[in-house]
Length: 170
Image (cartoon, rainbow, N blue to C red; front, top):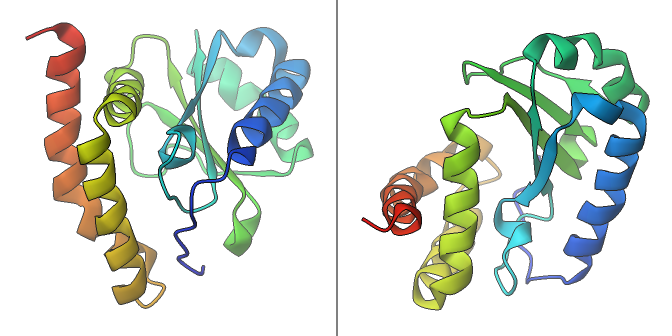
């Protein structure tokens, strides 16, 4: 997979909306809520051009039973893929275009992703710092996704914790 961090593209919001309607149309009541997350969801933020989506469902079993629907939409069904209680789906193979993180309603991973997105959106100085880090890592990682993610890890964890406190008002 080529690690490319592209300038913000306003079409990312449209790509999310189109995919959201496809997912809701096919999966129906398996989806209780759906959210655009990740860097492509933050206006002005450079990002790997992969649309990140969170699906909230009332049942992991319903998600598992809908695997063929995800596959029919072009997704690879990956199971938990390293995060307990998650169902992970990716589309596009090495040229990934979308990825879905699906959780049962109330899972704390939903809250942390949305809090981080909202925090970046209203803290432009932190957003710029994150952008600079991602651009630097993309150049230095030699297309090693693990190295890229590891390089962001402490920044993301630090600011996710701040975002959660910010959302809760503490």
